[in-house]
Image 1 (cartoon, rainbow, N blue to C red):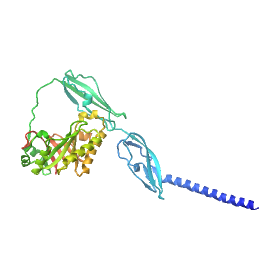
Image 2 (cartoon, rainbow, N blue to C red; image 1 turned 180 degrees about the horizontal axis):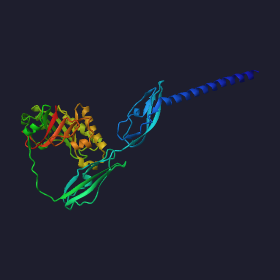
Image 3 (tube, rainbow, N blue to C red; image 1 turned 90 degrees about the vertical axis):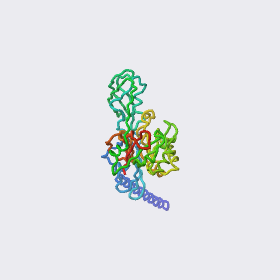
Image 4 (cartoon, rainbow, N blue to C red; image 1 turned 135 degrees about the horizontal axis):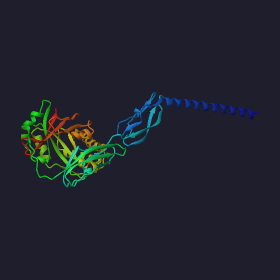
Length: 398
């Protein structure tokens, strides 16, 4: 009898346990359904993202009754990307979810070439290598000339330059190659007197300056100052060549000390052949070390103009901009102001502007560059008292 009662009691306890487990399971099922309602994907939006574009988890996921831990999505590599996200539900519990995006490249390569290229007869050049052919993503897009031409034969040749990246984006540019006889005639270059420059470019909102290097040799800065020049951008140094070390401009010390002695405002620029972030960091560190004895008023400029080497560097246009950004970011960490130098065409097609001040190079009486700039280098034929050679002249916005 006692044994049967014990069995009945145990059966009752087991039934209660099973019922409780069932209720817990049902409650859990209900909670899971609730969690699905809390997180909602924006199904009406495309999951495609252009490579390198800034996109965040919140662009694709909404948490209605909780808090999303939002962050930027890694868009540096094309292809499908499984994105992990976390959020806290309304009860404060951290949850994990996933969704998929497709990172694509829809930007065509750039062919930096004019409509007509002129070569002297018997030129020993590789035209495909000499023409800057770059892509925002690919480090080495397929670049080739289609059509017949002969650099050993005088004439005009109509050809096509074609660039294709790994995503199938294509740029085609018709060009004319002109092959001409060699000539020894030299075009005379006329200097532009400073007084003439003043009448065209000096206003109540601008000041005039010059940029100099060893090519100007010894400068009489007292005469420069007296002539009406307010500032000078001095080359601090240069990379000797691709993959080479940095060397100081042989006239840098003389230039900066004599310019500051007469009260001219001074900034510096560094001419780089950098093809990697590592090089850019090293060059910024080198510039900072050279500047240690001096206090400057104007920015430190990153000057990268070695476009004939671009194809051989096997870097993308994005890589090049990261190189410039790395140099300038490291400069600004030390309290200097960074600035990017570039010609109008390169600033408009290659460089990502806006993060740093811009030094525009555009040799014209009136620039058509539409973005903001701090300085404008408008001629390399300036004649300034105190300088025996021609010199670049610049205007700076007050």
